[in-house]
Length: 442
Image (cartoon, rainbow, N blue to C red; front, side, top):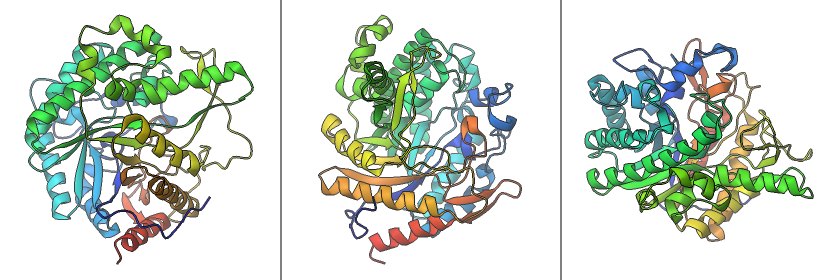
């Protein structure tokens, strides 16, 4: 699939890039920042490839001006980043860290000076370790602490930042952290997972209410990972049931609760013991847009080693794959965009989409360029078919720390030499910049 290269996206369409605090900032032990659950996990044996950490990452904390200049040079008009909760509130609650707040002031002001719209995500997986010590997301109290943290950020940045996301990829971090045992804090327990899911949903609802109250004219959304979920063997009923359960856990449990007011049927009864009177109304709060992170269709089959009994299956042998083995199917992206509009009736911003590689050695990345071209063309097809899509943020601006994969996977359109921290735009970045200029008639 190559799609139409001449499609003109609507005026005002946002063309941007996304990052997250722990993956790029570094400065993990500077200026009063407290430890996060990922700092802790990275120091556990065999949890992250090569024992790597986010201690330095891309050193964005010190090099943010250079990174903003890169974005301006590429012609981006929007940038989605996250605030590090433990940088702002080192213990997750209580006393604020002035130096941490000041850093995001400087970043936001630099973006505005460069005429780049800041899109602030409050939570991208870096829970303060001090709150994990009190139960983390398995504790209902964490939802209230998140609301307090949201208020700190809203009061400080709401005069300049109007686009806010509460939480990034609810399903991904809860599944990996509480069911699969891979992500921080590394737990594998179905009941803990169910509690965490519900409390994260409560945090979202409380965060929306705080932002509504404290950010006049704010545009508020949430960022969900939605990937088409298919059975490995469509003729096998057990594979079909595994895919259906995986679909609920990954794609539906959070947006259905937040936007439709109920949990999907396979997990509704299981999560009910943790739902108190009035909770669904607290979760289902009006928002302005749906943030979509989309990469690849998923294939599922039963997995007895998983607390849910469902897991990953293999994609068909003839399906193209990225350099890290993820299936590539732009038509699935198009169909997800169309389906989301029908199900949730909100404008969609594609807040992450990109191509990962472990084979790149420099700035030559023709397969990423082709991926972006084909997926953006599929997005154009969705718009022509009636989807309300209003922006696209590539993942990612920079090569960065990719969680359990460490630094080997590279998703950036800008190459980072981790020894020198030199940044060099890749072929895909130059293509993206030319595409954006073409969309603006330049």
